Image (tube, rainbow, N blue to C red; front, top):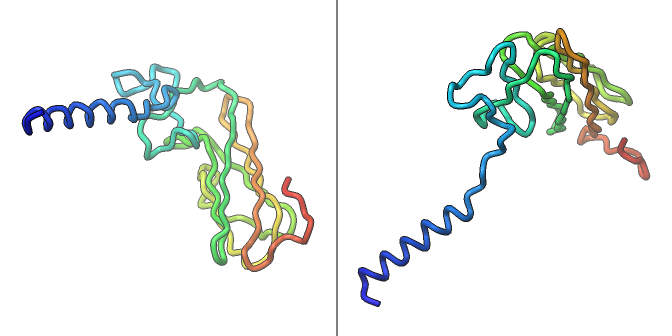
Length: 158
């Protein structure tokens, strides 16, 4: 095989490999079609698996029951939580609560999908209830351990 054919063969293999290894986008993450907007009365919602920065979003009807999701991370002396689904404006509201020895969470307002707290000791659960005006609410729970105070020996996460 001469060098020109070898280069073409190498290029063909590289292109084929990249097509085989490419991961198809999750079809649920962009159901807006080619128009870039949701058909009324649906609006765009972002989920944990279809995040705001990941493009797309889901077109959700106003009466679709909320399926809540939650991630909380304890780093150094803080707890950081993010809830889903999310949308522009005030479509969703978030009610946060804690149990165990965790401090109360702070949020900018009821329409914020983010909550934080200073926490250098304690453990327990964070619960978020996500509501939409015309839909059944959803709730999600996350177990949180502040780094300075690990859970008691033998404790079982909820």
